[in-house]
Length: 284
Image (cartoon, rainbow, N blue to C red; front, side, top):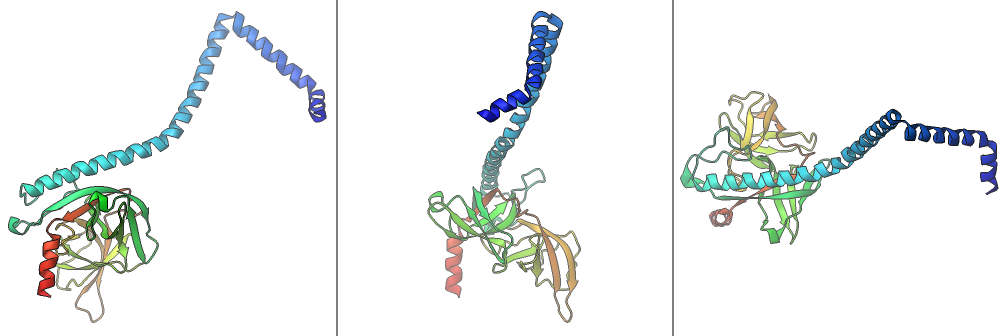
């Protein structure tokens, strides 16, 4: 308390000046129309600017939620359109169709029936040798093992295990997982995997050196794995070479999916997968 009195005593002249200045300004504003109008205009401008700043700050968080909701709704609509195209036996799609849609086999007699649904990514890693994603949907939502996972029509991974409410996805950025892939321009296929180095690039193997290959060629799924329709985008060839004494290319593929920005993903179910697996196991 003594310190407060000392402070007031030391700066009493300044405090008195501020008090008198405030009273003078209030009298000027109160008894003069022009000054009153100017004051209120200025105060409105200041408060409006302040509120606008606060509003913009809080809208950053609101926009994130809105964007997530819109992404979910868009994915649901794209999934419905995909199922419609498959049921009506369309063998290809126009450029005006959504990029969510895969190019399916031309022969309708060998087309599998796929079901599409969506989920939100709740955990994701890209810096390990064995990367996984966790999704917010599980067994009660119809998620099953070996369902393909995509983002905007681009391959992301494969469901490896499922609980009641969540599912675990083995990422394409996992050195233990391989997927059958082909060069879209000439249909030559090979095995695609990740070497554990750059999260933006994977490697396409087993493409013979006599096959015409060029940078920019699109790499897509073959449909052989049964978990993905044929023609799902994986990426584009960014570099290639022929190994010493090898009959195959070493091909670098720049991934189409941005694994650092996965929020909403699509889940692809092949309704005939059980029948296919059962038949293949009998053959073995």
